[in-house]
Image (cartoon, rainbow, N blue to C red; front, side, top):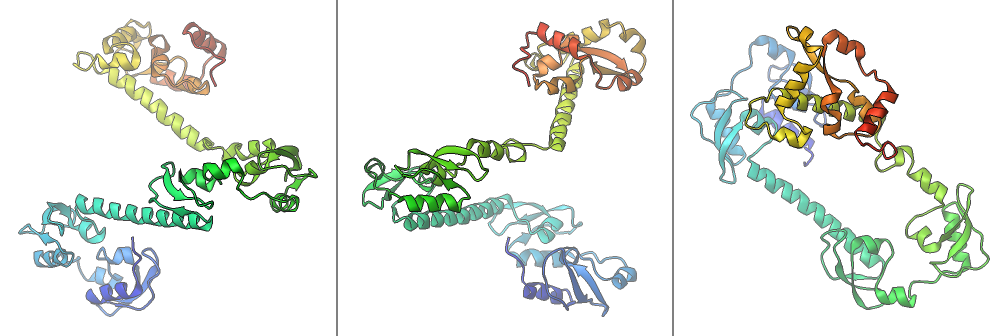
Length: 394
């Protein structure tokens, strides 16, 4: 979205009968202005466009409701047409004709304060943004090819789609953006070794720039694994191609790079706890929904999720020894082995977690005192009887 200038904001203030006295730096930053009543006050842009004014104006009386003529004029200024005969309020959806010709409904708050239009205009706006981004990327790719003495003949579409280009050796070939930026070139350059051969001094310099030390007395080629001392102090072997083009180091640095917060699938303890909490809620919701579906036409669908019908679940609960005492009071459907225990082993199968022999009715007080308590040995034995291989679990 284009940033507003101080001039644009000043014009808007003047249009409302006010005078802007400071520079506009952002929608949430305070502005000093002279109100219509003559009082000098401060406000922020987002509050001002909502109709908020200084303290004196607030005390002087209630905010004036806009007339239908004012609303029509505001719509007209944006190239749209207000179609209703009466203006109800800012949050009521009124009929209007968009500047693109679309007939629809919109709230005055959405149109005026949030700068909204119809969904067709929204799609067009997003497409325009995407086109601009694609154009930027196309220019970036083209310049990168030119920087490496190559000429791109096609337009860049996606990182893994091959494009025709003229290589630095003069031959026409095809390559995708991902491979080109990794240092790959045409087949002739690869097979004939037309890529520049480095001298031993140049190789020493390349390793030194990255905080490493080249240890061999002779440099053979870019694919040969040479001895070197890594920046971490570890002695290892690496090819110049892997070191330069693939940005690799020794295996210790590789492990460190993918460890902890650097891992691609790393999630914090808080995020993990949130995921687990949402999963538990989902399991309870499935059970509650299943229990209430007795006699429903959709009852067969529960077989796909849980492996039993709503009637099977109800029969199991009513046959339980605790049910007679709990029948006339509030009770909870409890997991004998809690969902927490399954998640500790990396098990998320709803059929296994919600097995009938893992469910029991409990009173509220019993359920809260039991909480997540369970015997690990009994749980592992129960899993083994269900055919779960504990070695494959987390």
